[in-house]
Image 1 (cartoon, rainbow, N blue to C red):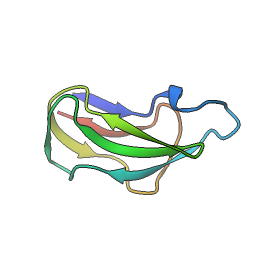
Image 2 (spheres, rainbow, N blue to C red; image 1 turned 90 degrees about the vertical axis):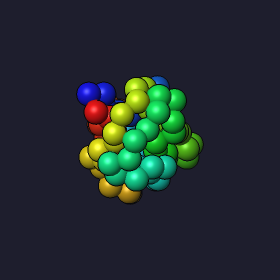
Image 3 (cartoon, one colour; image 1 turned 60 degrees about the horizontal axis):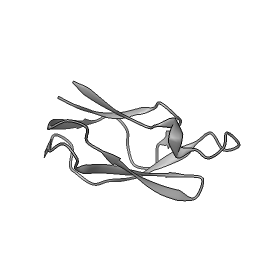
Image 4 (cartoon, rainbow, N blue to C red; image 1 turned 135 degrees about the vertical axis):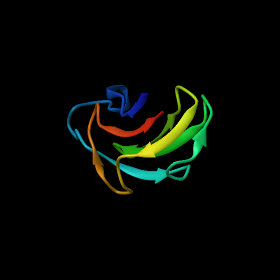
Length: 78
């Protein structure tokens, strides 16, 4: 099982420690391949893509517009 989490490198500073889950690029319970873009998050006015680091079936743990912080797990690939 592989977590899809928000890297702290998305933040240029700690002044705004929150971001938003803006878009899921795949449906819940879908099969994904390693390297697929699975979600987009907005942090400090920048949009970042989250990439699947392993192949498998995606389970979403967060909803659109959820507030995220560094390390937040938004999904899992099993």
